[in-house]
Image 1 (tube, one colour):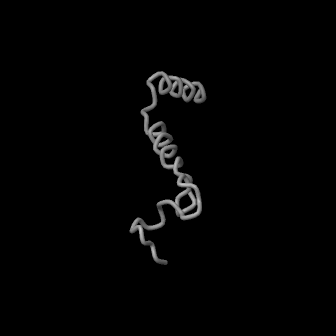
Image 2 (image 1 turned 135 degrees about the vertical axis):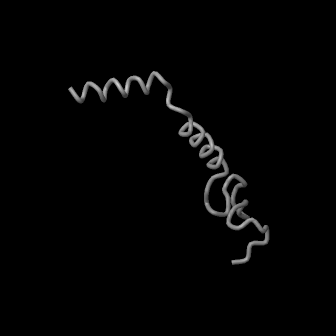
Image 3 (image 1 turned 30 degrees about the horizontal axis):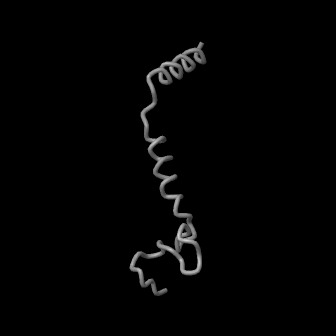
Length: 61
């Protein structure tokens, strides 16, 4: 398939609103994916680690 914009399947599709890319993904999806990944990559707070350890220790008893 010929892609004159040289960007593969991304980029706006003629005849569709600019927020819809050639691969069918909405333009805002990339930003949402970045936000999700930044939250997933955050370290687990020490208080959560302590709680999980306490729950694990209680399960061994």
